[in-house]
Image (cartoon, rainbow, N blue to C red; front, side):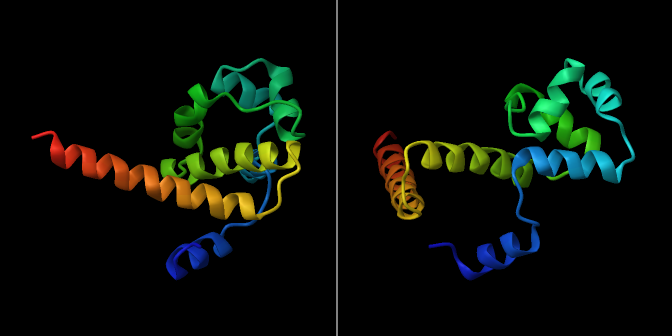
Length: 121
């Protein structure tokens, strides 16, 4: 379960897919899909597909996207990864409980890594 500060932070962000988020950023800047594609060095047809959820934005270009729109890298990366997690949960017909399980597994892995690093003088 997210901490209260995390819940408040994510409530401020408009909920959307990553593609919808990209479209909104592009439109706020008054750009065409073609112009954005050129500026990010992507095939011009990819922006339309990404915005419609038919193609994933290439992770290797995420830093360039963040710089281009003056976004926060961590927040944008989390939005990007969340989109992938949601897609996979939907694909495998998981309940929303899968996210609570994933959070517990992430906590376990972080703690396990911290304990191992303490043992490695």
